[in-house]
Image (cartoon, rainbow, N blue to C red):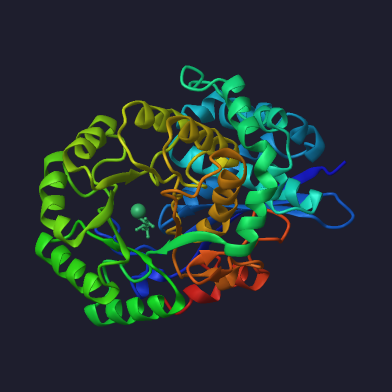
Length: 434
Ligand SMILES: C[C@H](O)[C@@H](O)CC(=O)C(=O)O
Ligand SMILES: [Mg+2]
């Protein structure tokens, strides 16, 4: 038995706002940050589970406080008892304490905290099994996997029986897709040349470097002054040419009519999708934009806080690309429900990667989706941002614009001890010169 003795939450922040890495129209100067959770165990081999949720700086301490409030629901429990019924564990952590649930429910800071803790449990489980998370999942039977999930509030759209049927459909050919991924990797796109705060010179330089490295799919930020958006789109198109894919991301800046009007002015640059054109909660607004802007696709999801919202986005035919976030949804259990919902509704999942540790998580999600859920790469691109990977013990590996299959046991977000120490807020050395 492996007993989780203590839940530790650390406030880890990186001063990315100094170079405007990660900047967009809504989030002008983010400091990529993590509420970083370590599950300390009593195991002789010293094994521990690591998880994080992503914030952009101030307020990270509120997430840390939420983890501390939830910690007693996990401390003292055996990993084996939790993994024997992951679905029940998930329900207990997210809803077992009704006073804490009131803070959400299943949204906001309390759900972010749950995500960090739940992902840490998956990390611990996968490390105990000696497998990367994608493989832990891919090796499960459909029945065992579905037992990890909570279908409450979505069973009108997807039943556990339907989920099992979806997984069974792909099961006989899983090994072929694992082999295919090992040979070619999983296709990605880069956002790193397109941050809003970057100068023209920097954008051009980063585009050229990215093309040399083999990237063929790019994303730019929009949502500022429309003439500036157009000028930046022109620069990007000049650099990447007409053949490469260009996505646009407004980060929730526009009203519905404004989104349509602005995208009509940007249409000449041939955008593949417009991401977060309006409020992330406006399901019918997204549907309206999608209807009026077709064939430009609508993408959303990085601020979609739970499976119920995604269910409605699918039901309302409001999106073309599902950009679930590994640490905003309530951890991997809820992510898996959304993957299955997306497969049922035929919507490609292109997870959100703009943050610290998100690419490390999402590689497992997209690869598992391909291997066992959707069985398809069509319309799928996994976001990559070229920041902060050096702080992880097993960072993502990219080759010619494709993610390589991760082999390190766990869920990928274990940070180096020195990086944690240097970026602990406010006392870490990275913050002493601020
Ligand atoms: C604040 C983040 O960098 C955000 O801009 C990321 C994002 O929208 C994306 O990666 O997409
Ligand atoms: Mg985005």
